[in-house]
Amino acid sequence: MAHAFAKYADSLRDQGETARALGFWRQAIDLAPEGPDARYAAARVALYDGLQAVERGNADIGAFKRALALDPSLSEARAGLTKAQALHSRRRWLQGLEAAAALFGIGFLLWLLWKKSGSSSALPPPPPPTAPPSEPTAPTAV
Image 1 (cartoon, rainbow, N blue to C red):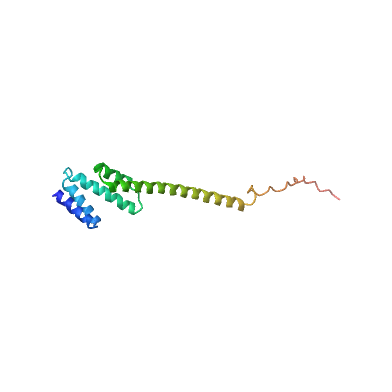
Image 2 (tube, rainbow, N blue to C red):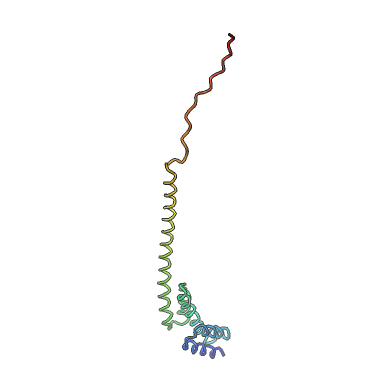
């Protein structure tokens, strides 16, 4: 029965219905997890999950590595792995740029606040010293 599900999934994939094919490959795995078609179906599930992730902009390198581990003959998995690795490295580069831009922005805002404060010392100048009060003198009688 699992073999029939895997073959039907292949025909769906050939017709361009990848989402439905994924469901049938998953059912083939569930029906016979240790069967002869389980590795074949699991490799296709990992491959198309990885391709969907790349289409959404999420580089899932592990999905392609799983697909290649299960079926080394998948040339689509090799191409997908290359694309996912490129997307992953590009994302790391962009994250570095975002961090640098954020640090620059914070530094610029701190500089503006420092310049707005006027002087290097934000404390007001101390008041001038006052003379101590003189002692009261006794009134003199006239």
